[in-house]
Image (cartoon, rainbow, N blue to C red; front, side, top):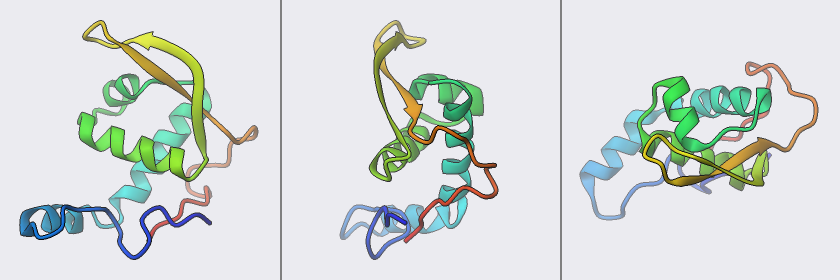
Length: 111
């Protein structure tokens, strides 16, 4: 398994107590969110904006988990773009695995 952030659960800004506290507050939620996002991207390629809307996530949360899945090589950029709600172009991500594993069984690494 790929360790997303060696030595830490969720990254934070060094020397910032509030940033570290926010990272700590995410706890095991990051793994659960990665599973949900991977499940949706496995059903159909999605943009970050589409994931935000579909799963009711803030941009920062969805974007971070998508970056983690990309670093873990579980998703990749499809080479396509789609318009976001604001009319800007966004990368469409697709699952790397051809056969999707049930979200509760997906091998998602945590630090």
